Length: 153
Image 1: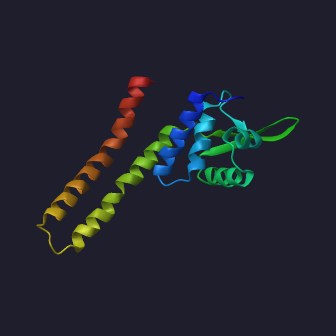
Image 2: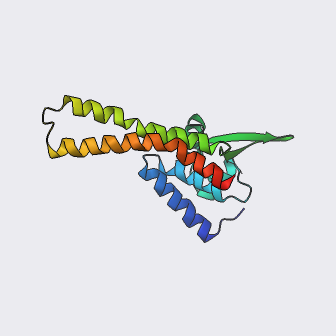
Image 3: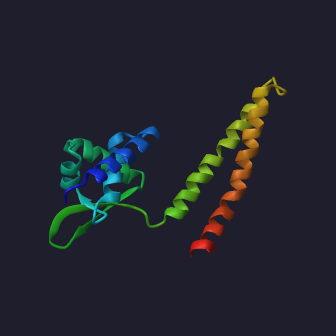
């Protein structure tokens, strides 16, 4: 497979996006490659070649992605190569779990508010507003997914 300039640029943008989320840039670039790859999967060798990076860097990134349950590999009869692909089967459940984890920040915000002595300060007021939003957000997540299912199922 030969990547088009548009595909290369998209892979880089996806890499930068994930880098801003705290991941290694190559982790995001591999995810981007697997998203734009015609077969939606790539061998280890293809990843090294198409991204122009070292084998050790790809190995480390794939190990990370597998540990995070983002990438899986398959094999094919008579072929010793592993074919890596993104795990996207149950994106709804995974995304819902991620959103609920974000909402858990409320626990920390509430504990901070309990410990603060300046309860009437502007800071505490903004933190209380944030806590209220997180509670609202957490309550709305299930109905958000239900509305989506009704609209697109």
